[in-house]
Length: 201
Image (cartoon, rainbow, N blue to C red):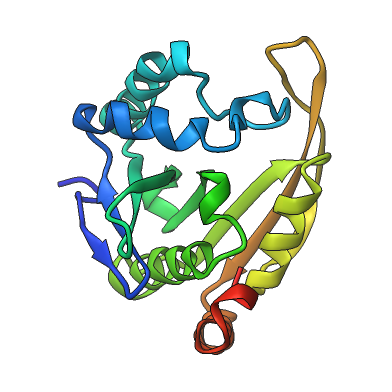
């Protein structure tokens, strides 16, 4: 049995569906909303790279126990992004949440907050995790701010952590939420979702 089995997570604003090849066209359309692949510090697939990106996500699932999701907006029924559990360390009950991106139309809405609440709830309360990690590029300032707004703590910076496709070197900022933090973080996210949608980003 895998540490993370496929699961459908449904909230008021969004639904997280296990990613499948059938999502290819919808993922391509979501990434096109804002031409997200032009952000050099992200890994959003360009139209001609969607199939390769999908193959890699599903291979990570099969070989490494990750769980990639398509994010569907409940109001429109459209796929508006993707996220995943990965870097799974079942023996130490740890995992990372990342590879997250949203179509421009879904950014700065309640969708991201609710998706993080659903993912964290499942990780801490169903999988029994003791820590959940988040990582992002040093220059992805919006992502860093969003992770801090969740209630995560910055653990440190991994210098020259990765070589990027353009040859640049990525410094990776590492954040985490541990099980002792979770009750307060959960309450914080629930409070954010109870506020007007434009502020629950």
